[in-house]
Length: 504
Image 1: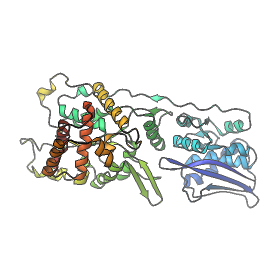
Image 2: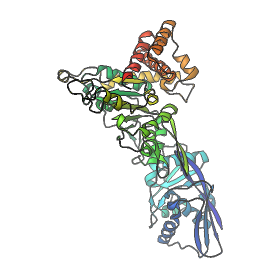
Image 3: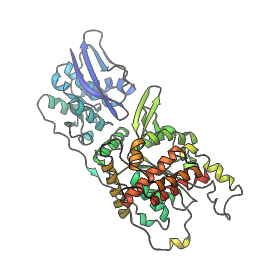
Image 4: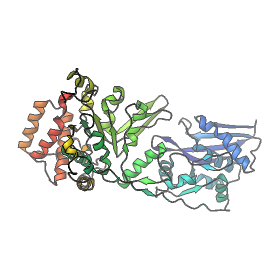
């Protein structure tokens, strides 16, 4: 007696379909699971056996073999419990085989037969929709999976409920999507006293997704400015929300199946390891750069991160994706994020203040910021000096626009870019443009081209730096509502590029 059930194995955010082939044959009584299972999958036989016993279903004294196909694909996680149980019940002719074969199941079984929520319900629902199958999962995971409209999602509380559903005694209701989570509230940009140039740089970075580094003494407001960035960014589009939520589903960060339209803001501590930042560990889980996909990754105390960790950012920042390569896994994750960094000018932080700087000045600044390699620094579109704020500035009333006003201008600029790249779905912001597309959208007149070429020669801009100036200038023009880049737009873009060049 044989039967087949279906489930998924996860490779990054991709859910690959897996056949669960169950055979009950004569021979020495045994319960074997084959097909590259990990420890959690191998232990499923004990959970399944005990759960069936709790439902007064005794396994026959025969040889039970469960094959997870394709056999060369590693299988990890406890979500294989439910499909193994369904395949076994179908092989024992307790459940109809055709009905079981039309579903894609995942879920962990408790010893009493109840279903425990598992990670990855959203990517599994995407796979079920592509395979034209109904997704069967724990009730607690149903709200998350139900966001995939093309898939019918059935959530159950226990294995008994599923048996009643397949035998016609009880019909499982389709799961409903979780709530759209709304932000509690963002910190307002008007809370920042002074630093008008830094506020302008934040607006440009948010409008075009340009990477930004701030260098200034302690207490100048670098972290305070970065904390205001989420309030300037537009909400996630439905496509972006789905992309981000799939990564958060794999990482177990979705709460009650709710999906947020707010862009993620991740700020790992400078003691974070390479695996925590880039991804890896057991099962090659997503790292902070992938959890910040479509959002912001803020690295405070940037030079304090281990240099080997910082250097791993160079490729993901350019490509928008990262390949986590391990001995037993090669997993690709998307990581299209806005990188923000903050650093003191030196270890003591007071390099620009002759009364407070250490005796090693200016060498202490060169040694400290020298931890940031030239190629990595070259990837920042906006380099900003954040000077100390005087006491008199702190007593002044709030100045500048509120976050809501700046966010409105950012949204308008993003809509211009959305229209511009409508025929190029792989491009979403000006920071993504390159090659011929960049030449088209950032065309310069003869005068502006001469200014840019002189600046490139004078300050030794690399080819990457040259193109990043053009992208920033295009974003500044979008914020001004201009069709073409004018000389003031180019001059402002150059000013952000050249500042802080002397420190590294």
